[in-house]
Length: 82
Length: 406
Image (cartoon, rainbow over all chains, first blue to last red; front, top):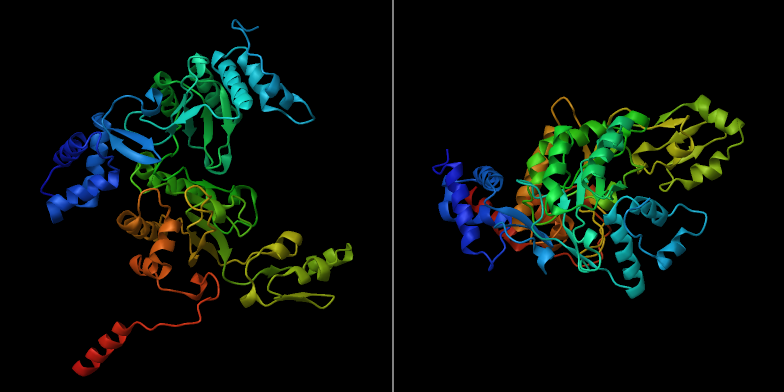
């Protein structure tokens, strides 16, 4: 049983994306690894997968593409403004 | 009659000449009522003139919650061609085996006509029905209309790409498992992986019913499932005689073309040394009434095929020589294997690295060990080229230690 709720994990993921906005592009697996590294055995990949879904469905983050897919804050349509 | 001025395209018009259908003719017809297509023709003409492309690719475009299915395209000549400033592609998950009713096709075309350029690609190389060209504002309305009619978007980016299959048992007597059912089942099972990119790079499944591999899964997919059998090729000797009587040169066209020389013909009957058959399908294709695949059927799973994008092209290699593609247990053996492979790839794959490249980097032996698959002779890709054999000493040390304990 996870000690963190799905919403809490989603919030932590969102904070990571926000903190590193413009500096680092997180893939879904990067966020999962960060959360597991921070909380150890109290979270697992399945919890993180559910949290990612909550995060993306909330609209706080969006998927972007630049060679590979990454998770980002909603903003300008990348290539549209270049 | 168009209510906008049609672009002049002397270079593109050259492509209308000749006996073959031309995409330019089709686009010109569409350009009369779609300014987006008119400007697209203008931009393409400019590209032909300047010998350079004018598309920008990528960005944050998509529909809420999904990371796949929409491919952002923007023109870098938007001032000159404003109607195609946005020209996003929408991938729609095709039905297994690409079977549509005409009503379904009309439904798709009507949706696309209302919200996009009206141009389609039936089908893209991954297999999706591809809608070519729309604006960001239209994406959510298109998605809403598609899902209301039970369609869904396909994959794009670093996710499971829309699985595809041959039409298998629906039309083909060679199918060794139900490709359409397997493809549908796997598509539904991995909806999350299909719509929410979480992998180092793209992942493609393709399902072929027999070794003819009509969807070219061995070359075009990361995980290729090719139907096969493990008993004997069924022979109808009466039909063999009919072929011979009708003038077929059985020795020249069948026996001598067997790549492993496992067949013989005494002028009356064919015999096959099935242990040496490599399932090339040549004899069965040439004499379909006389020869058929065996009855103990299943599939071979191959891994690592890809087209040249980052690194060169790879043909998939055998991972599991034979697996029963069992509908009754919901393909559980296959799915368990997938979980182990994805766990490994998640852990060890680097950004934009396909599984085939990852296996080449870490070594097949390490990969097999990690996914708990025992090494088999079928995993040998080619004879060794290095004549030196190095024994790993630690195995001996462990053995010594255990011997001392005993």
